Image 1 (cartoon, rainbow, N blue to C red):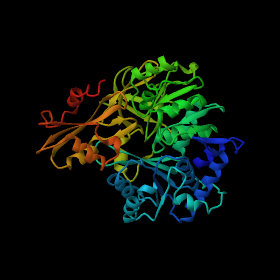
Image 2 (image 1 turned 60 degrees about the vertical axis):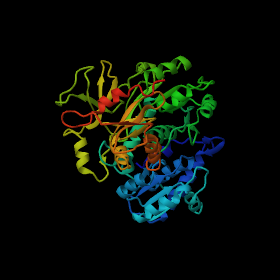
Image 3 (image 1 turned 135 degrees about the vertical axis):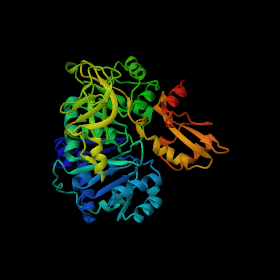
Image 4 (image 1 turned 180 degrees about the horizontal axis):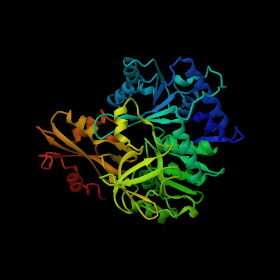
Length: 500
């Protein structure tokens, strides 16, 4: 079944009721229905080949969510991209995915369209967060009636780019079945109720905000309080109107700094996308009386585990990400491939209807990431206790998660090493009270080198969340007997860099 049709079936009977309240701009369920139909009809007029990708590099907006629904509805493949990405990053995604359509913010049209047209993209439209843009101008000409394209569960619905520790990003292919199965599982496991109201303050270019949060509300026919950008004071003011809130740890840290925090009507706080410090979990409980529900997922797998929502399903345990969700297989293996005992640390592997089919145009890489018996190697290291609760210990790769965003050291190092005066670099993640982890670069110099100049130069080349918070200049990088840079030692040396 087309995922859009399944989400549409969750809409309430009263289509004129408010579906989304975006700071007073009200969108009804009928608006979502009509708007997605008009955009789907416009996409249908472009004579795109079957399976065409629609790449979206635009700021968060309700119209952006409607565009996502329209792409599904028309049967094309949605490719969300962080609007912070710079030209050098966007070039890779457009070259690799070869989208038929690119949608960008109007302020970026000049450089995005030039890059896209040079790489064979036929159509580039603009979409802004103030309900303007050429895409909407075109769609207003179209009929507001549209029959969703037929799609099988195995058909591709979206591609999410996720980097490895070496090389450039790779596209995780998610099917209609992957996305729908996970949405249904979370609806039931998190006990979504007809009266629920979701406060949506997450970006919609990755799993958490687009698939977990948006799908949850849409499939349940629940109203959303919508924020294009997170503002702690504004979110705190509207929390009393909501019953469900999803955030990355950084959002909880910032909300705790607000003087007024009325959570009396919230039934469920959910955290994910980055490790939640146990101190934050305890501070939130002390301040609000609520136990934050932590869960675990990946771009390639959607949600895998979750602390219980209902008391009868078990207790919520801070510092863990709970047991495997219904239908998800979870196992912990030693280096030799044998199963770990209870509480023994090993490699996390998973399988289930939510797990992706592979990486876009990378069959060899896909084969490497799956075991012979069909389990996906997450690259994470963890242990499972006697209750079946998973605790993540670390990552077998050097992935850094800062403020909920994935940062891959090798990519950042590549940009740093190109800068004049830099000999070599090692990018690491260290604990940070606000972001969970902060990106730090340790570099050697071939001559005169100013740390702040390195940061300033990187800000023009890569997304802000990848730019190191601190650059440390050393005479040489520590290495082991094999000549490999000892990043573990660097992390230990600089672990207290951001202590308050």
